Image (tube, rainbow, N blue to C red; front, side):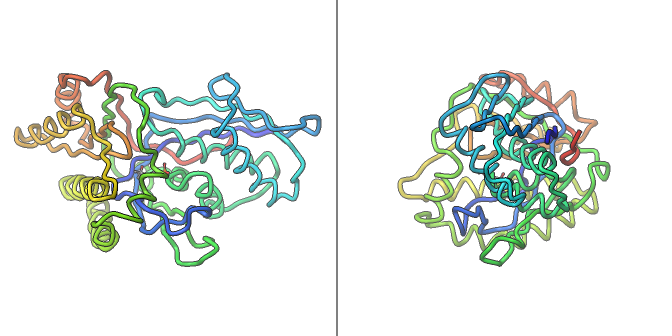
Length: 325
Ligand code: PMV
């Protein structure tokens, strides 16, 4: 009753922003991401008849409070499906993600936990079933079940059974790069869960955001198939700006960017003006990820490292989906 799984994070190029069902984590819109090989979580789940409660260690430190409760209630879903409601587990996760720098680890964390937990209890899931399960831990995590470019289909059913991710292209399809610029380790002020909720309920721009998604998705998938970097990058950058615009039009308004975020955006635009195709995208925090082609590795790294406030730059290639060991 023990299994270990490894999962990578992903960066959304068409963002998931807003839920239609809070408890089942069902999104308002489809989203599309690239799985990143540079950031991953390894998780071991061991069920043990002698345990009287779950224990959770993250990077060798015992976790309690909200983070612990989230993991336990997610394991409850797996225990229910295996009809082992009273069985407890020791969970050990190691994050190869700079969490202190504000990088989200929930995507790789929940994908690894779902895969290890299900395997430890002998549940045989298809990738789609595993993705639908993972979604209930953290929405964006359902995309980390697969490698390469991945689309999360929002689904239409009330029970969420048709809301899961599918692979668009395997990691080997296209060698592009993503540089993550690491900023100061300030904690996120508005968590994505809370930010989405406020935006759905109050943002003047939210309806237009949802309406804009199908055209963006069709165009970006066409760009990915043809390996048209400028098309993919420009759609991703515009989609990111639209997501952040919805937060500016919420009540009360909020903003994830810091001054360094804006400096990086300017540096990326300056690179383009100099003939280096590079595009940025930003999630629910101040960190910026920059898409570029392998031949521009040195130019992009140098430029990003020269931006005041950038503490580090971590480079990823397209990564693999979740694997069990
Ligand atoms: O899955 P969550 O709750 O971490 O939300 C992720 C939201 C964004 O990162 C902003 C967009 C996305 O699609 O990953």
